[in-house]
Image 1 (cartoon, rainbow, N blue to C red):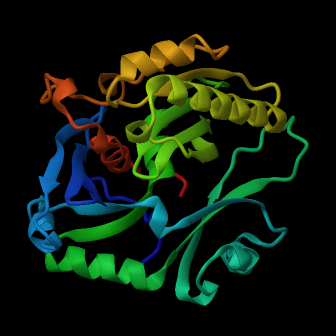
Image 2 (image 1 turned 120 degrees about the vertical axis):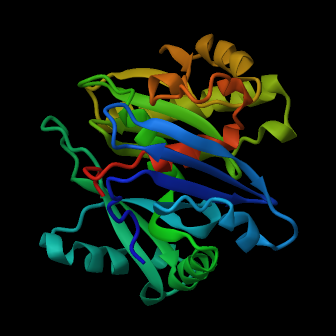
Length: 299
């Protein structure tokens, strides 16, 4: 199964498997403003993943968001080859970065924006995952009655949300917490420019310590973006829904030289069926992002 296959025009259900639970979301994209139809968390008893997945059955296409431990994402200089040979060239270029043979994996690429004033080589993101892992996920979904058509990753799910909040000619930074730590993405013109996993776990350290480390890592990332895309301003930093968001926003806003705001899902899609968004689990954020995938998304 290839990553990032185009989604149909029907509503899309997306899910990610987390320890002991499944976070999911369903979005109707057949309307001018995408509508959130369903979102939540399903508990899993032991290893009964199939029973839990069967509860997501909505009749339409389904997307699985892989956990970061299940794939490798690398930023590379784009090989100077014809477009039809790009994936093959990248497959061998990233072999040394993988803990499995490239022939045993699925490899796809994401184009990185390359404004005219940028002097460095055109770059791409390469993403790879073991075929055996993808096959296991496909069997699990199929046995649960799901029409799994898309394999997505955390970074592109987050990008899909950012795309709807960008301002023309300006980059947008979005930060969230995932199972492996903090995830910072920068997007421009609807595409991913930068993605960094920050080794900060809110459960294992106090707010002051976390703020100090996050400020340092986010500022380093912004400085790197400026070196790579100098002349393109970063509009603001948006914090995805999470616990103690207001305290984190206040601390980061006092330390960073750009506006820091809390991301409001009501600015992204129609949430009329969810009058109390505060009751929606933060782990649904990337499922919502994956369910926002549109046909014109590349890839």
